[in-house]
Length: 530
Ligand code: NAP
Image (cartoon, rainbow, N blue to C red):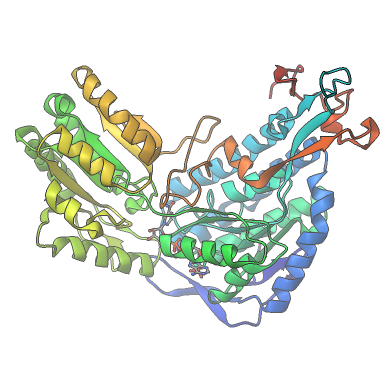
């Protein structure tokens, strides 16, 4: 498959004339061919018109057709073969094994949502049958199902060029919900984006779906992405990236005549709490695991452990030495873009020069855009006094907060903003201390882990990859796992509609064989397991 630099507008492709830009080799900073044309206002208008025209047909496609569509996207992605991995390695600096794993995860997510569609529980069909004889008033017949919210704009992430990008979790869950998608390609991996976009375009054609189900636009600046969010035909936005970017798009969506939800996943420092007995009994082992988690993927994970909280004392100092030794040995690795590398360097410099912060370790140096790991420590009083110390430094840097006692540690947790994850390392004798922290952990984070690290996000039914602001813009949802579909659904009630006017999901004969809640009780039909 050839990369052309064209935006994909429905079934067609066009080289945008609103400026041009290149992908960049992450290791060298050298421009990669070809040039990508920035989409114009006219290109965007056509994509939005097509998406709007496709919506009513696409949202009522049979569930099995939509499931096959998602599976076909996965097949088409695999059919690109090694060209996808090679282009992605060049654009992101990520190693082959990581990207092959990420491709498998991307295809796995598409299959997961195909299964969600075949089971049909997401429809949440409910029937409260009429009670004509109810006294003092008869009860109406009331039936509810979830419907697709409308066309969705997706902004992919730089750090997961496959699993959180063009065919990533936002796109998969929106398409599963029945929402056409327009993706604004991430400038950090345009070639990868085009290859995957063309795979989706082919899948639309193979499955004989309306062409407006999917478009992909390249933006040579920020204006087309912003215009997309402002367009009245877009009814929701999925975003993964920086806090500044997410908040900018939320403001645009809120300022519209019809405000729409922006599901933005933005910024998290993922505290790791080391409880006293765990620290005493296996501090050195935890230090090794911590260093491995911190440096994984050059620290460019949204669940990267950017903050460690522990009670100060001999055991913590031994942990610090062990972690510092491990990090000093850790090789430098290439960051996703020269810009992300420059931001990382700035963030590390800010910590290194802070009057109340002690530098404990730096990792090995490497190429011009390689991240050198960094570990710092500060007393809890200083941490509480300066909000800048709570800001995310995206990359392999972490700050240890030395607390006077467990109450002080609890106070630091209470002062934190919302997080994607909080990890607690505990020994059996730490149970009481852990129990005391749990209500605060639940207030702060979307996922609470015991004796592990947040890096490595399982894609399943019970996963929450979300959390209170600024981890995300809406703590009620997740961007990973089957519940991600709920972001792109809304409930509709049908009161006293004749059976033949009702959607199949709610008709008396239950032709879709859905599990339905009748008068509050769940009635399940037999499902073939996949
Ligand atoms: P980003 O700069 O926020 O970019 C994300 C996407 O949004 C890109 O497509 C970008 O366009 C677009 N965008 C950003 N600001 C915009 C604005 N004001 N108006 C319109 N569009 C806008 O994020 P990134 O480059 O992927 O990563 C940088 C930072 O994001 C990292 O340093 C890290 O802090 C954070 N991050 C967080 C997570 C997480 O899961 N929490 C994941 C990845 C990154 P362009 O392509 O044109 O720049």
